[in-house]
Length: 323
Image (cartoon, rainbow, N blue to C red; front, side, top):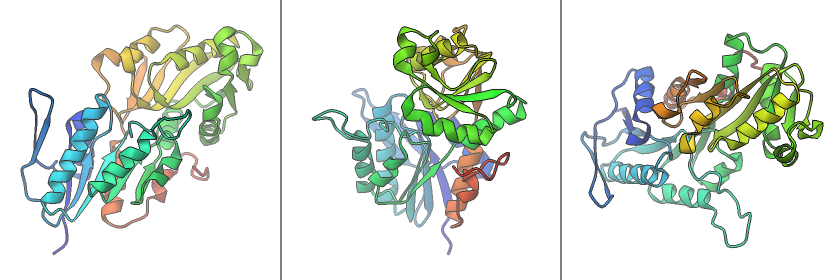
């Protein structure tokens, strides 16, 4: 008897899990979740999963520690219920920025999370735009690393915004990401010298690349506090950019950063995805949220049917660009 595909969504981004299930034309599995008065999390799987292939969908976001424990407790319950395989779909891999020792006596927390997931019996991890692709090497189980760049770039093709454009990285560490995104859009690219931009945003040395008279896309994987995007937008407008579009996969938006950016006169529009839940306070007319649900649904379907995922890593508008 063939195994059955079942999806379970957890509380951190249940709406995204519902959209993934709708794309796959299946119902989400039934799970009871409660939090006791002292903060302990309780989860109970309310249907048989014996011999089934399970996909648990939840980012490690918002209250990151609670969302990670939700994943771990759900996996434990599923494993003890004789699921055949357990794949965890983590659209945003929280703690991914702690991927190395930058100072003595620092933890590598991303590796710790990888070890804990494996220890708990997870068979596979599916994620989108890790902060550093090398994090895949922290796992000894398969990791399917999906990319949001095709989806994000498609927004600019569909809205006829690709003409007279430049793609900019907010710092030197993101230069590779900016270069690839520029290739998708057939645009030039540049880098903000953030050390100069902090003190003198009007300085030509604040920008490496030609931005005057161009629409500037500022590409990053995460928007957290929003301060880096503000600094970058100020330097770009001071150096002659006609419009500034902050673009990122993960809209963490700490301390209502969405409103902070929306109220900034140097920022024209913001484009993100729904890998993490976005509060009403962080939404505005300046914000466009693109759904990763179709991408995740296709990935889950292909994994379940043992098909390759390489087609999902290409842009329909520019399929020859290698991401």
